[in-house]
Image (cartoon, rainbow, N blue to C red; front, side, top):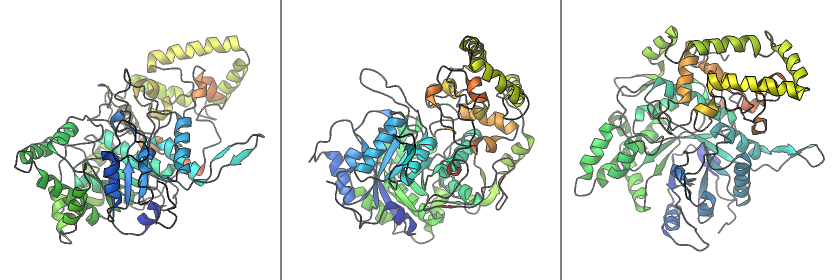
Amino acid sequence: MMNDTTARPTLRDLLKSGEFLYGAELVTTRGAVPPGSKDKLVALGEGFASNPRISWISVTDNPGGSPMTPADVVGRYFQDRKEVVIHLTCKDMNRNGVESAAWRCASSGFTNFLALSGDFPSGGYRGAAAGTFDLDSVTLISLLRGMGEGLKVPGRKGDIETLPPTGFFTGCAVSPFKALESELVPQYLKLLRKIAAGAEYVIPQLGYDMRKFQEIMLFLAMNNVKVPVIGNVYVLNKTVAGMFNRNLFPGCVVSDELLALAVKYAAGPDKGKAFFTELAAKQIAVFKGLGFAGGYIAGLAKPEPFAEIVALAESYGADDWKAFAKEIQFPKKNEFYLFEKDPATGLGIPGRLDAGYLERTKRRASGPNVTLGYRGSRLTHSVLFTREKGLFGPMRSLFGFLDKRKGLMKGVHGIEHLGKFVMFGCQDCGDCSLPDIAYLCPMSACSKNERNGPCGGSHDGTCEVGEKQCIWVRGYERLRRFGEVDQVLRAPIVFYNPALLGTSSWANTYLGRDHSAPPAPPAAETAPKPASGSTAGPVAPMPHPPIAPGSAPK
């Protein structure tokens, strides 16, 4: 099933061409796909593969957190005819499993990935599966970049061995469809972190507000970062619109207003087919007009509607997209936008941030999350844990002494864990990220243990799992008070070390064993450095002080 595809342009090449591209999504199902299978899933993929307008087919990885057939098993049926993008998530495998899956894909000729943290597992055999999340989307991208360029690993003789490069081409997601400032700004900043880690293209998550789609382009332009952005189109029906509206699929947003229209048109004789097809086609037209690199169409059970949508999108006049952009704006009530709105176009104004946002940034008002305990934690850290400052040197000497006396160290560790458990819900991970997330513990307060920024699953500030407030929403409110949002989300990427579980994080910090220890991570993990196929100039600090076009980096 896998043939030589060296003569065919790669997805990286296609995205460099400047042509507006089309991609299709194939959602995997549960069950085996034996060799020679002609089930509905394979038939749909082969139908997409036979369409000359489709440049690539994306295959999902256990969508919704349910167990499905692996993406590369399905993709092998049409990889000889189309570029295939394998979705790779962190929810089901630890970092070794993820790396092995990537080697398996490389060995089968797959080199295109969409790197995602993934939905929290929602089901499994005889009970719900436990989420893994040993890596997150940022650290996964970093791993894939390392493999793409030639992964450096310990050799058998104790030296460093460089493995053959795989040439991986990795993209990332971002979710602009957030109602709150404290949700949206960290999403944008994490996007820069993903690009710094090695993401070479961007596909936003699902929503139906073209102004929010455009904000991604405005934000990247303001930060002098150039990567291809591909618009995401899901062809709705009444049932799916209702599920998105009820947040049954985290990160997929349909407002009450759009749901009402979906219900209205679904009551017609064609069950809303014409309305939903036109909505998708108009979105494609707007993406073209805004300068997106392509359109990524999902939600199709048959290949034929794809051609209908593309044909309709290409039948519109050159400037029709401007009216469509104003028409397709279905935000939630009182939704936050980072950029000022241009009344004439209905879109954001390039280079001009929202006035209310700028005013709040200047005030830096305290909120309910800026507690006395948080202020005390900041003071304690500045005195005791700021490297090479304050009492850090004497404490390093003390812990060097204690580390050689296991009985004393055990007692100190017990006191440390008890105090941190009472104050922060500490899980004794040994590689503490409290300073990375405004003194909130990702092991106890985040369902996915996200240490490098928020996932895309929050809903109105609430975690996708349970009813707790998103840890990064809480952290944003704290960090904004002291002008440190940008500082934290531009810091070196955090790779948690599970080998430190159950050990003293104080000792690990002072003795250079945790993720905060020097030497610093490679430059590719500390600053937005252009990956192949992308360009990035100096990155403007955001949001303290506010972004300004051409502003100097910190």
